[in-house]
Image 1 (tube, helix red, strand yellow):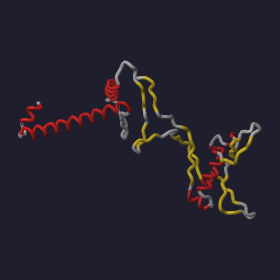
Image 2: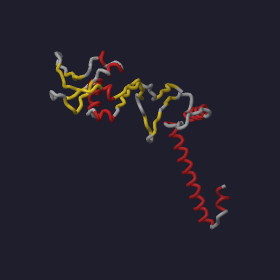
Image 3: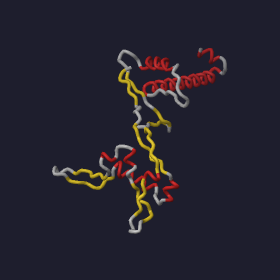
Image 4: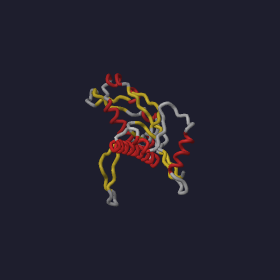
Length: 200
């Protein structure tokens, strides 16, 4: 087999923000406000367009400078506006650290699904001097002793699946043909056993 490729992509480091909902509610901070604030300051929020000297339009993103959004320590400096107000009628600002904790995590870059189940697809081509059926048999033999964790299984697709489906359809057609031939012979000779001898 040649050009073996896998759809699996390594995980990416991420940061989970775990919000204490009860405490946030007591302080007048909503989940929406936390999400909107962190998304704008860390990920960026579109603030319009700017036409450069070259006449090209550029998207303007509003977010923290790069050196202020590099790690967990930077999140300690983020404040979220609450629904309660100060004496001067400005929203009371609550430190994000006060209503949430930050945990390092990893996320999948890409999740593929088939029939509502996750899958990793491994594909390959075959050289000109071999047949797909031969490669399929050798591959099944090689994977026969592979111990998979619970919940995992291997399914064949592509040309191998097409060949298996063709064989199944051909077998079904042959079975139906034999049944129809037997019925026709039985009706012609008026016997249930003689058609079997004729067909044999």
